[in-house]
Image (cartoon, rainbow, N blue to C red):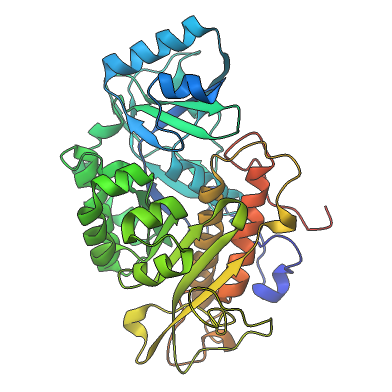
Length: 426
């Protein structure tokens, strides 16, 4: 359960055994600090071209649109006819990206649920998906179904903006009865996204609701990503209901937050989302990110940094507090933290796809780390109070950590981390 940068593991996890556990067959290891995610299993095909051409081809700038098989095929043909620069198939999916990043950050395993084509041959897009997935991300629970793997055409315009046209293939056919209840109930966290609920009549939508219900009833925190602003506008009422009934952590960018709440300010949007969930993370592009949550009056801790005001006066006053589920707070208090881009952001913005997934992976790591620590070191002073926190670290530290991990993706070509985040000196 390692942390990056200046965090010394012996200070955060004073336990005897330090080994990374990614071997699911390891003997004598009763605990598996894994995260389970349900996703549309898709591969990405990146295409580079002018922004005006992308709009002519029907892409919604900065958003994701779902295409039927015929439209998806026609789009591929048009892109080939234009002679654009194409990057070969790469493993994708917002939840899978987050799980991949979690395994690198924590050194712990993760499990991916979803549907994949039943026959995979060398050279297939599905072959690329499996080959590019690290061992720590367990694919054994994928459901093989006849038909092609889902695919997303990612159109990268000359200004660096990314737009998506998704052909779901068999991804939407994952049935609710395939959700493994024992695996969900033993997880440190579960995660899915709004993409799985588009449209709500697909089997995978029912599977997502079943997974979240199982997790909620077992006391397992639930993470939920909002996907894309257009989809939030389309399913706004359904999203609010899902957040209220099941979700612990909601992740979104500012455009999605605005679509959900009507607020264009990240703080005000976070304030409204906290009426529905315990924790919210709002990424704001070049402005950094805002994280909000709850703590109790008895557990709040005042910041040692400069107290700042925005749309909410003195919004970061209690950012040194640890997060607590709202239902566990006798006297709940909203807390917020904002952090600007790490080191001002990378000198060269190589990739904007996946930064939000990376930030969410860092947040999930901290929450899973708290569950790890409370079970392995129950007599620690960190768990001495009557109210058990949801997070291991303060809200301020979580915001910094999420920002740091997002930076690694922003300066890389891939939306996925390919190893642990190193020290700041590195």
